[in-house]
Image (cartoon, rainbow, N blue to C red; front, side, top):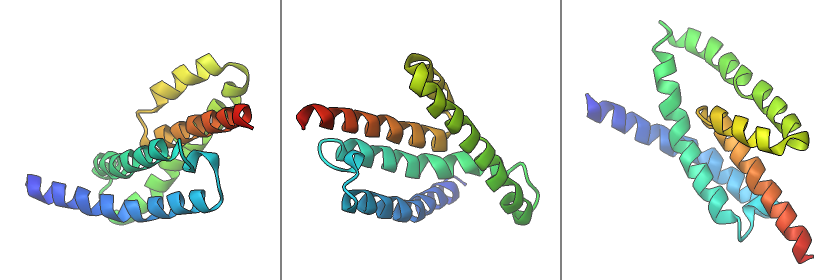
Length: 135
């Protein structure tokens, strides 16, 4: 039923929010520009969106597997390959062709992990470049 799925999504959101909250705290403690005002609100909203989107996007993928053991074995590999490799390419492209990187980043943002990493990268770059003019 709908109640079953909503309750599981809410629980997974809460569980996923714990490491995201720790990441926000660590970012603030280390004085990372993306985690400090005026960018802290953007980073917080990105983190909340990621905490909701990631469990919701993984649920349909689990239906492809017949046992929880196969989910654990393959899903982490799939997520790694659909996140690390494209992000490495995207970050490399952003150095020489930022317009193309923005377009590719927007398209790849259908994957929550990519959207989160790319969004945090963009916020960090804006925070660093904005800080240079203030110094």
